[in-house]
Length: 248
Length: 226
Ligand SMILES: Nc1ncnc2c1ncn2[C@@H]1O[C@H](COP(=O)(O)OP(=O)(O)OP(=O)(O)O)[C@@H](O)[C@H]1O
Ligand SMILES: [Mg+2]
Image (cartoon, rainbow over all chains, first blue to last red; front, side, top):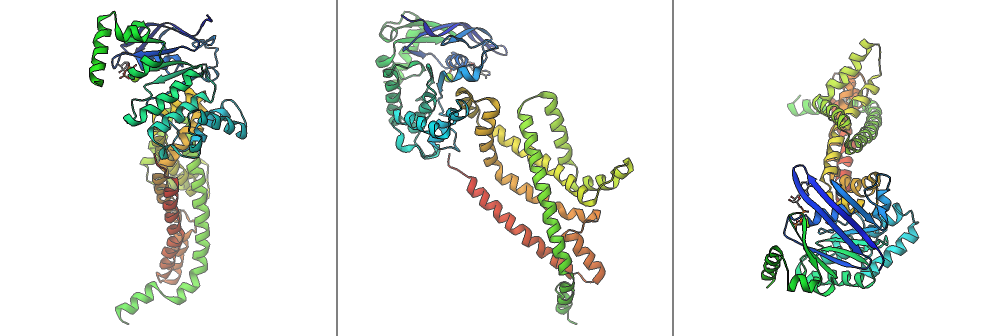
C-alpha cells in the first residue's frame, strides 16, 4: 500500500481563548474517501480549513503529497493547487461565467494561455455535466448547478486531494442528488476525498471510513457499517441516533 | 416696464447673452478640463488608498484613515482657499487652477477611498477563500475577484459623489479661475445684468445632465444577478 497522501498530526487550533482543535491526527490514503461527521461547533470546518491553510494551525504538522504545508519555505499558492476545496456556499465569482470561474486559476495560477485554459475548463465542466452551461453566470444557475461548477473549478487544477465542507447543506432537497452524483463520479475516477457532511446515505454508500468528531477531537472512526451500525462510544451513538431521528 | 418684462430683461436679455456667450463657452471648456483632471486624479488616488488599506498594515491604515477623515471633514472651499492663499505665505504658490484641482482631487480621493473600501469589505469572505484555495495570491485575488465585485457595488455611490464633487469646480471662481461660474460672474459685473448667470446655469445643465444620465446607465450596466 502506498503511503498516505495527506498526513496531519497533532493539529491544534486556538481562536483566542477558544481551543477548537485539540490534537487531531488524520491520515488519508490515496483514493480513500473519508467522511467526517460531528455536532455543530465540533471543529469539522476548522479541521478542513487547516488542511489547505485557510486557517493557520496553532500546532501540529500537515503533509500533502509529500509537501510540508506548514514549512515557511513552502510556496502555499503552489501547494494549494494540489488541494481542491468545495464550500457550503459555493463561493462562485458572480461577475464571471461558469467557464470564467473554472478558467481563472488555470490562467492566473498555472499560467496557461486563454485557449488552453478554456479547453481544460470545458473538460472540467463536462465532468460535472455542465458543458452546456459554460456561458451562464452563477446567478443564472440553480444552487446544485453552482455547486457542480465549484467542483469543476477545483478539479480543473488536477488536485491530489479534494476537501468538501458540507457541499449539499445549502441546497434544496431536490438538488442534492446531482451534487452527490458528481461527487460519486469523482470518487470513481480515483480522487482522494475528505467530506464533511450529514448525508448519511452517501456516507454508507461511498465512504471508506467515517470519522466522528466532538469537542475538537476525533472520538471514533471506522468503516461506515461499524460507525453507523455499532458505534462503540456513547457520544457517537447519541449523535447518530439524533441524526437518524432528524432524517426519519 | 411691467414686472414680467423686467424679469425677462434681467435674466433673458438677448443682447447681453450674445455678448457673453463666448466667455461662458470658454468657461464651459475650462470646467470640463478641471473636472476631468479632478476625476482622474481623485478616483485614482482614492482607489490606490483603498488597495493600500486592504494590505492591513496597521500604522499605514491609521495614516490613511486620518488623511481621509481630514479631507472629508474640511469644506472643499476651505481647502481651496488654504492652498491658494495660504501656501504663498510658506513660499509656495500655485495657480488658481492648480489649487482647485489639487483641493478637489484630495476631497474626491478621501470620499472615493471610503466608498471603495466599503465595497471591498462588503465582498463576502468566501470569495477570498475560494480564490485563495485555488492558489491565487493576495494581489491576484484582490485584482481578479474582489475589486471587480467591489467596484460594481460602489458604482452608484461613487458616481453620485463624483458628480457632487465635480460640481464643486464652481468654487474655483473664488480663486480667479474663469470656469463657468467665474466667467458668468465676470459677465454680470461688466454688463450690470444677470443674464450671463442664466447662461452659466444652462452651461451647467448641458454639462451635468448627460453625466447624471451616464451615471444611471453605468449603474444599470454594472448590475448583475446574484
Ligand atoms: N474565525 C473564527 N474565529 C473565532 N472562532 C471561530 C472561528 N471559526 C470557528 N470558530 C469557532 O470554532 C468552533 C468550531 O467551529 P467549526 O466551524 O470548525 O465547527 P463545525 O464542526 O464546522 O460546525 P458546523 O457543523 O456548525 O459547521 C466554533 O465554536 C466556532 O464558533
Ligand atoms: Mg462547519
